[in-house]
Length: 377
Ligand SMILES: [Zn+2]
Image 1: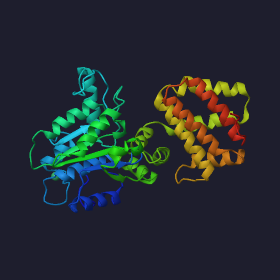
Image 2: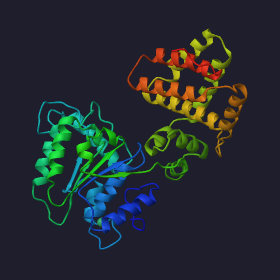
Image 3: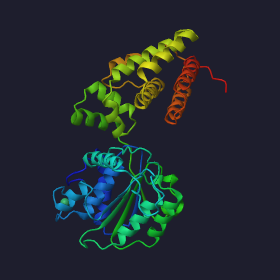
Image 4: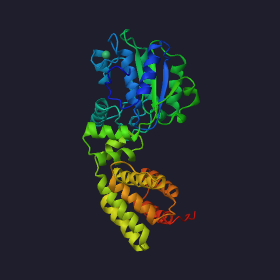
């Protein structure tokens, strides 16, 4: 694949692509595979590339990206493609995963799929879609035994396969135990450990490695025209997640740098009243939605990591100056403790705890970490 075209715009992963290329051409390509790796490294893009390679009609240099099979795969319209993902539960139907979903909601789901067609790194965002249920697997079972064009290999891609509930996983296991001829299963997941052992033992496991922040930075600069400083901060904040980096790059990181400076200065020097004021200010003005909260906290984690590891990235002079100032002001800062505290808050906010309480308690904890004190439990 490495010499062939790259219709899914995979970033990096040259070794992974060569590995799959040799696996496919070896003729010993198994029928079930799990592609694991962190969020945003390109697992889905890789699975789609494999699916397209297996069905491409070109003589060589597959996937060509131009034949009818390649184009249909890229548009998720290939008759031999079954794409499975979590859907909201709108009806107790055991056989139709779309039962009870209203037209308006269906339009939104199709829009999400459209974004994934355009850019396979995109994370589908479907309201209430928490798990993959048995209806999806029963429907799949029906589909895969239907006759289809014998010239193609049926491909089942299960996105975020760890979201299968127990019933669905059991139903899938039955299919994997007696796999139909000419069908390939590709399961992508960030959490392979959450899949039952019985499923894992039926699949070949493949790990997709992390993307370096430099690759992500270059992608932001070249494809999105993001300026170098903004691209660097976004890429490093995303910790290997290309999709997250693209989201971060749309926000003004300089603005967040400013907020971090103000916050840490307040935490460092001022009395409790000022800390409380800073909390209210952030809560009411800057942290009004989930995305901005996660962004602020991710940036804060990156900041403490850089202080701890004494990292001086290339382009971000403003950031470097701030890191150095922190190191001078708080030589005994417990950076590790600070990072843990921020990670806990991120997690709590994702579970919708009370915003002001969460931020206030984080700030008071950070205050102690800055001085190198261990907070009392
Ligand atoms: Zn092709």
